[in-house]
Amino acid sequence: MPSKVYLAGPEVFLPNGREMLARKAELARAAGLVPLSPGDLEIPPADTRKGFGCAISAVDERMMLEADAIIANLTPFRGIAADTGTTFELGFMCALGKAVFAYTNVAANHYRRVVAHYHGEVAMADDGHLRGPDGLSVENFDMIDNLMLHGGIERRGGTVVVGHAAPDALYTDLTAFEACLAIAAERLA
Image (tube, rainbow, N blue to C red):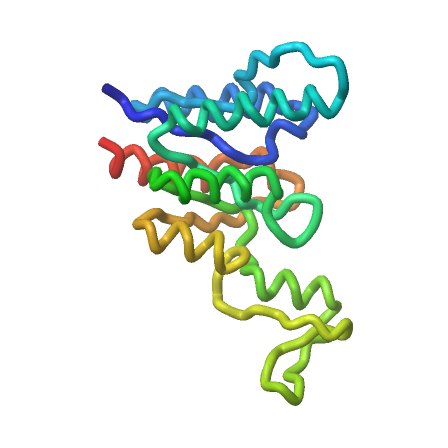
C-alpha cells in the first residue's frame, strides 16, 4: 500500500494556490505516494470566522494523523522564517513520530537572513553571544531555519533539501520539492 504524505506549505495563500497544490499532488502520485493536501479540504460550515478557522485546523490535523509522512515547504514566508502554520504541522508530525522531510527555495541560511534583516548590524556582545541592534541574540548554526525545525528533521532521519529559486518564483518553483519528493518516495518505499 502506498505511503500517504501530507504536503505542507504556504501555497494555499497564493493567487494560483489551487493550481500549485494540484501540481504538487500530481507529482506525489507520480512518485508512488498518496498526497494529502490542505487544498483538498472539505470544511464543515461554521457560524463565525473563528469557528471556520478552527474547522480548518481540525481537518488539517485529521489529515496529518492519517499521513505516514510530511513534506514541508520551509521557504521563508512573510518574513525571514518559514510559514508559522507549516512549522506547526512539521512539529505535529515530529511529535507523532512520522517521517519528516522539508525543502526551501531560498539558499541563504537562517543566520544570513537574520543578518540581512538587521542590515548587517550583528555583533559579538560582551556575553559572547551574537546580537542584533535590539539586543536579541542571533543563532548561527548553519541551518535553513530555526534549529528546532532543521534539527528536528535531521535528528529523525529526514532530509532538508535546499534550493535556490528566482525571487519571482519562490513559491512556484518546484525543483527543490521534486528533489525532496524523490528522497521521501525512496525512503517510504
